[in-house]
Image (tube, rainbow, N blue to C red):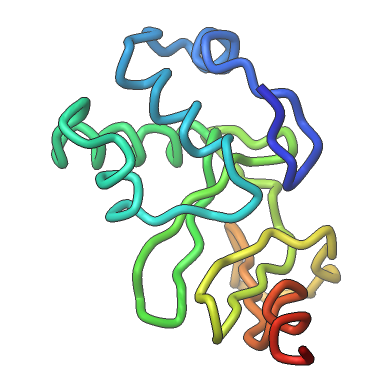
Length: 149
């Protein structure tokens, strides 16, 4: 399956094997659903799409283990809701290397992973950054076209 946001082919079973995770039906379904769109997806939205296939607690656990293993990265939207996207680079349990700019549309509220790498930031002595996040807010390309019509 193709994830259009980063032009990666997503093979859920292979991803789970690479991260030493059992490839259960629920884990596969979560990866499949997240990979379907070009935008990040929230847990409540995933719950709606998956219906009764996966209960809330199981979904929460799956998302947490995927984030811990470096399969997904979490992006907080402007309302404080966690959204998830598949990591596009070689992330691991030790470090997420998916440090790019996110764009949160203030009109449609969708979150896009942009192919804009964050500049290296030198931390003060004694500080060690584990990960960096930058989110830009504004109007996305699709909403801009609708507004200009």
